Length: 560
Image 1 (cartoon, rainbow, N blue to C red):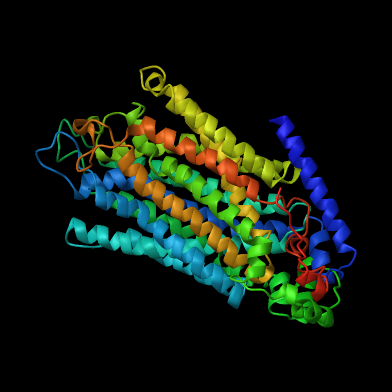
Image 2 (cartoon, rainbow, N blue to C red):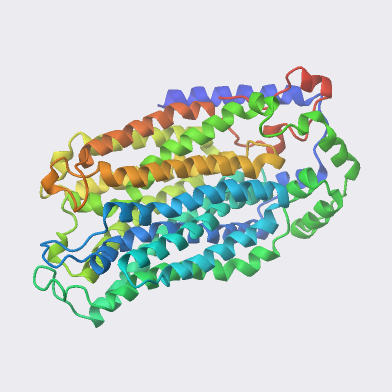
């Protein structure tokens, strides 16, 4: 593995030298962009990380908190009087409740990614946050006289919640990449994304606090003792409170998000307003920056800077890059969201969570939240911050390659001796191995697939291409959330959840996920290394060759 990384570094170095030789015939960088690339780490960097990161905190909380309450929803709205087991959501309802937000997210990533390149990052940024706030609150206020009515209302608002969350992906990544200096850009974007880990963790902590408070106030027997009494009427408030609290961090950061100036790269290279870009960044960086309107017009008028997303030139320059970012994100999210959304089912299958009939409704919420919080605390959160610490040292390519490889190894380590893990006394070992898959997902492709699309595409297409890449990821999440729900069912019809056909079982599902991770490892070779380079150097925007060079096949980025 070490030899492979050394070989990768050699290739990256050779690519950098090739770029330097080509830049000798190129025009100079804009002063405002040079100032951003060379800026020391300042207070505004941390402000931008918090403002953009709180959006991701909210995103993760809202997307993953639903998995904490789906068992409770089944007990409340789908109780079957004569059943020996508590009520569960029917397959179609469970798939809709778990997956509808991802459908909204996919649509939002494509729409707001495109809109961010058309209207500007800042103008669109506030829209996504307000949509998230409104729909978080509305999800908790879902109404209806029947179970079907409540679920339909919940799905409606969670779709639009996902739509707002989807917009936050390309906009937050693009804004942070365009604000950062080239030396620590990877760490800054990774720090924004790492807030997702805290959102995931906070969702579990909130569920523990709320369920404990209600459990201690409203005592109830286990389901096997009293079927009706095991779910107290007040339990209906629990899931609503958990969902609605997702609006709080978004509300707190709305004002500061609106105060952020537009990024200089959008203002100069897309809006073509050198004066405004220089004025905005002079305030942010607290240095005097000369406006260079003539140079901006020269750079943006070149044919090499005017090709569109569906042009032959884009396909030649960035086609393989876009294929690499979309396929790796797609394959990662099949595995990542399958595991995240259905942790409770996996924990139940191996016996780490007690049988549902031995608990009351609130106890079950508490146990599920405690299990997921432990995994988030020990595996998910540390993985994100390892990426922050090492991404500008190891590089994006090496971390992504390592992450996919280790995920494959640990998935196989869970799947091959699966029967060993399910025997009494071995559950802790399973959870440790399971936690390592999350650690290497986050110290690996879950972070890098978010970072790289915000760096390697031209400014006028950056948000759109990031949105396309992220949407491919959410397509994988939809496959994972809907597919795993059915695939993980027991092969024995008598042991499946009510309403589900027999599946391939958790063990075989883990084998499928390990294959997805290995394919992600292979497709990583389509993704270029962006460590230590300016955004314009990666996309070829600033140091633009003459039109003759453009016609002859000028290209700034090389696949590793």
